[in-house]
Image (cartoon, rainbow, N blue to C red; front, side, top):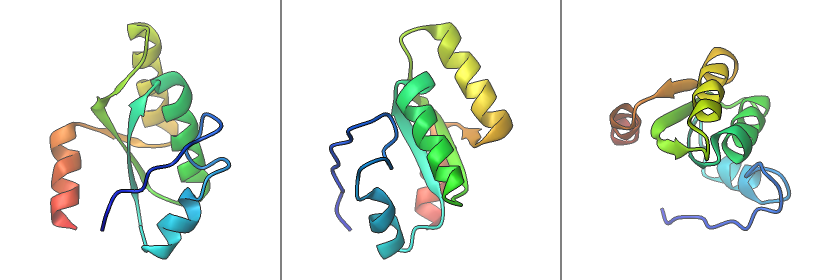
Length: 98
């Protein structure tokens, strides 16, 4: 399966894009999220992912925010409410396991 490229008009990768339809079509059952900005786009995508019923995993070393403090607080809060924050090695293991 190839990669899907999306131009996203808002913070969440779900909003105004074909992402949800694509995930349904290829029968995705969980999400591993990475990207920037942890307190903005990443958080919005994580919240929308869990709202659509997906278990969400957040690859800690594959996220970034301009401020270290907002990055840490965002990771802590998402781990408490919306996602399991995991390290990149665990994320890669999940992909390998299929």
